Image 1 (cartoon, one colour):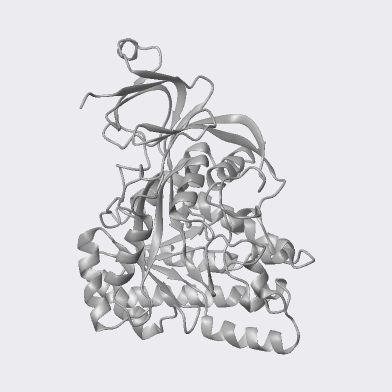
Image 2 (image 1 turned 60 degrees about the vertical axis):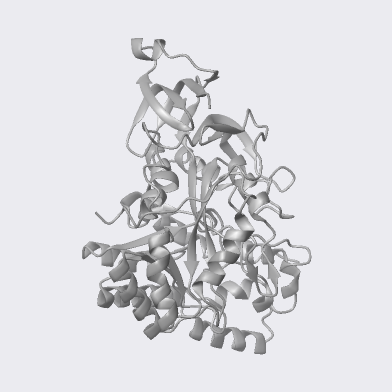
Length: 468
């Protein structure tokens, strides 16, 4: 097979650690070399294709470590397939997703994992990997965890919420943590006290409080903070690292910060919805608030400052989307008259890189921190680095040419996610993806999709690289 070479000239290359005006040479799907623009070395390079990145950023493709394509939930399924969801991800400058395979109650991890392999195989526009959701922690599923780690499924999600669906009690959580302590896996935790929340849901509905805004009111900040605290203590007892997903509240950040101040291997993720949306959205009239129902829920706006601060101080390390879209029409509407029946989840896989660039423009984070929380750290946290998450010789050529000056208005009319609304409808942001390469292949070319289902490949992961 003949070798193909692509040269990206004249852009500002931004990684988690450096900013350098450099040319990037790509050969056979990988980064072959970087050289300062205008130097003799760069001047000798020839290529089959040259991309002019003058005035643009050249950044690693985003790594979204928390998506739910085709997830069955609440009697329906997430509206994005692996095909539509990964295509939308590419449009938004994300070149790798880590989705969640689900173990069903009474079934093995292997059955759940195989079902998700089958859903994704041949359908993805970008590369993908899997975490495993444990719904049924018992002796046989604990043994299976070891086998999955060897296979490159190195993280396991447990739920302190959703009794009767995904919920694990403290004893099950402790056993899974002990197992991961021994096999090198990373436990991911949905930290909300689901038993207490269910009581509050029942009481709210009995009082006739049925609107979407009550979803946020019953899932109290204190019940996220309490569960976060409890998860941390259980992880300490087990001697295991812990990654808390979709952290939404100041009090939960404080629990993570306190643990990290003790030197504990405790990590936290937040999502764009908690940084840019609030309970004001949940309270939108005419059931519009249902569009913003997700768990953990949106919080009052004053929590946002603590989340941004956590991202700056590294008490929060990652921004993922928890992309789990349900159409307003026919899906979110299942909860009319009973907020507890609204499918939980928001669309966002296409918006993350742009919203975080807007945060750079707004002065919340630096450019390098943008790349760190969106590309490099998720890749390191989940065993994909340096193949993914950086621009360096030997890395996969997952590269985005990003125009930092282009203005765009986010809207369901123009997005590529398979969902009938945008959580950020009408919001204007500065910065836009122009061209995207996935393993050296151009999948977005000057705002045209040139990729294909099946280009994306399954990518096994090593254990967490963020611990050493």
